[in-house]
Image (cartoon, rainbow, N blue to C red; front, side):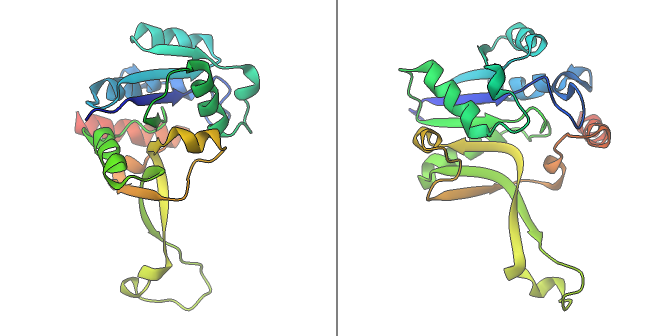
Amino acid sequence: MNKEVLGVMTVRGGSKGLPRKNVLPLCGKPLMVWAIEQAKASKHITRFIVSTEDEEMKQLALKNGVEVLDRPLELAQDETPTWEVLYDVLMTLEPYNPNAIVLLQATCPIRKPGLIDKCIEEFFKQDVDSLVTGDYFDETIWGRPIKRRQDIVKEQVFVNDGNVYVFKPDIIAKGDLVGKTYAYVFTSQEEHVDIDTEYDLWLAEKIMEERM
């Protein structure tokens, strides 16, 4: 695949649900290191960058052999949109112009081998503006007429699980993360764990221990 693919992980020190979660240990490694190693294992990511305002996270990324961009403090707030952080990365790297941006969240460590590359391949194959991982879930509100599971296919909604996002750079520049066309890659139930609480961290560790 003759494409320039930029991988990005955005981590900050001010997480509220689980303080300092990106550097908490998971099966003996800081959480963010799992995503770094998965990005390094990708056949298609040609460059990988960690965007952070946090010194500990910066040093951890450098120690694990990846580039770091110092994120402005104003882009490391609770309300900062993801697209603004990615746009800052693109503007900082100019005139570098990748064909795709792959966003990996540190809080989703249970990516199966090959998932990242599968997403990148599907993104280019389908020629879409964006691609996300996740699965369909039944949208059922109690109190409405109850239908059999087999009869509620049309009421299902796709929910992204945070594992892998792939974007065309030009939609980021427009302040968008979806675009006009998009695609899905379906993931397993265990990959849906997104760490935001102590329970999430405990569950992820049990899954990882079983896998290892």
